Length: 137
Image (cartoon, rainbow, N blue to C red; front, side, top):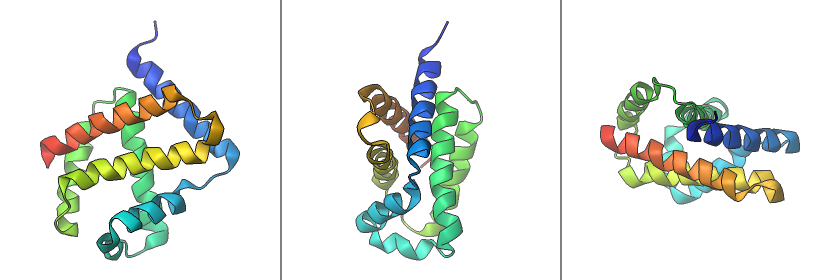
């Protein structure tokens, strides 16, 4: 029997496959938005080619792992929040904004085949991950 977690994870995975089939690199689109919203954060990305892709990959990994019910996600998120203290004063709201920006970029990259169910799955997981971040903030 399929659970809600399986359904969300399946919807999220299917949307990433759609984006991959379209050949869209979401990293440049994500960081165009990110830097526009948080211009002071550009200095935190010393080796942009590596660090930007790593950040997007980590966000996707955490969201997908959480949707799959992986029990290690809270431990890694606590470490990520602690690591981000070295980047200066990152407002708690910026974490939510960054997650929602990612979902917006995914939706744009998927184009007209992006479904309401996929959007809801990503946004619900982003809110759940944000609540976890807020707990450790």
